[in-house]
Length: 127
Image 1 (cartoon, helix red, strand yellow):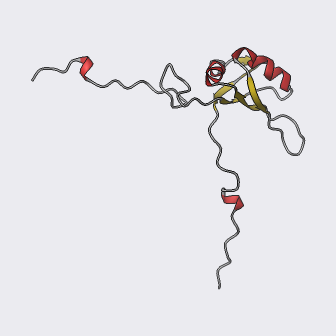
Image 2 (spheres, helix red, strand yellow; image 1 turned 135 degrees about the vertical axis):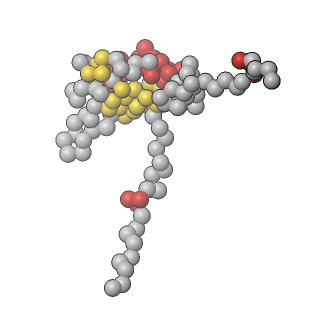
Image 3 (cartoon, one colour; image 1 turned 45 degrees about the vertical axis):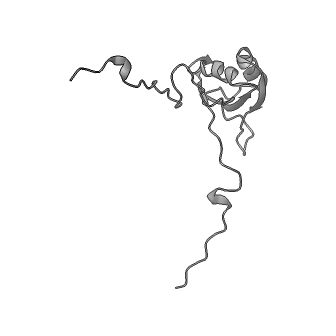
C-alpha cells in the first residue's frame, strides 16, 4: 500500500484560546470585547482614547460596585465592526497604567428573565 501524500489529509486550522481559527481571531464577526485588568481609577475617556486606534466604539460599559459605585476594573467595548474588535484583541497582555490587560471576545449573555433567580420558589414538601 502506498503512503498517503500530505495533501490527501484534511488540514484543520489550529484553534485560538477564544475558539476561533488562527489568523481569524473573530470568526463569528463579533464586535464586542471584554477587557479586564484596568486600574480602578481609570476613566471612560482613558479607555476610549486607548482603544480609539482600533476603530470606532459604538458602546462602552464600565461596571461599578453597587455599594460604592467605584469602577470594577473591567469593561465591555462594542465596536462598529469586527475588524476593530480584532485589532483590540491584539492588545491582550498590554500594559495599561502598570497593570496587564486581559482582552477576549465577549460571549453572548443569556436572555434576561430566563435564569434560575427569576423562577418562583418551589413548593415546600409536606411532612
